[in-house]
Image 1 (cartoon, rainbow, N blue to C red):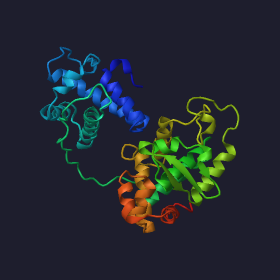
Image 2 (image 1 turned 90 degrees about the horizontal axis):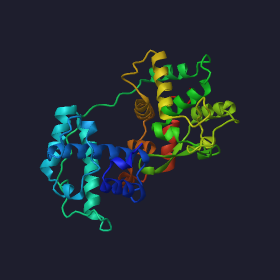
Image 3 (image 1 turned 60 degrees about the vertical axis):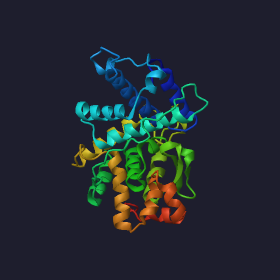
Image 4 (image 1 turned 120 degrees about the vertical axis):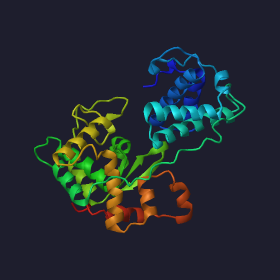
Length: 330
């Protein structure tokens, strides 16, 4: 939860702008707040504005926009060096923080309606660190089938729910937040598809193969119909419910998958919910001879908007991508 009273006014204004104008998701707003709070704590150390030795206790709500105007690209480089030396941050972590800083300074330089406008952008020529090229970790077809067998274990009182969750991950490659956010009315049972809200609040269609439809239908037969909480999470609409009869949480889903991995004899330190997304994409590409551009559309990658202009990926290709998943008949 963001504690706005601990932020300087210009940071809160940026978060409001990102929410209302840039239409960023709550998770993105939390990341922006975390990254920039860390950056401004460093700035107070770097500019000799604090004697606090505990980094987390450094207060930033007294920072003024005049201090921000003094920041140069060398100060940004110093921050990246600090992340490397003190936190051993990986290139991907530093790249995310650079992205946040760029968006922040673009806002300060371009939003003429803001009272926090500055006349130069120190992040304009800030380069992104080169990332290590690593192949994504994913489950083999045999291991995927083991995981599904574990999920359907009748000794598990939530077997129908957990099996449906695991089936959707392995067949559709959706993100954790997308799965948790599914409402029953998002599913078109006649057309075998559902709509999810992905990164940047972008809505996209995911087509459901036979395995997905069967798993969802079996779960809906036993899904609680009474005593469901009416709360801010709109639990009464949610497809997946926890034992407390509220929308299932990210943490609960992660716990379910971790438990299944351990029971299937797989390394839960090596694999995770996100690795199931990689698994779905890899299985469809390796076994289904699916066009990589159709996979980009299916997975909702940010670059698809540009790719789509040239490739004209159609819905039938995306549907075929799901149908060709080798787990579709499991």
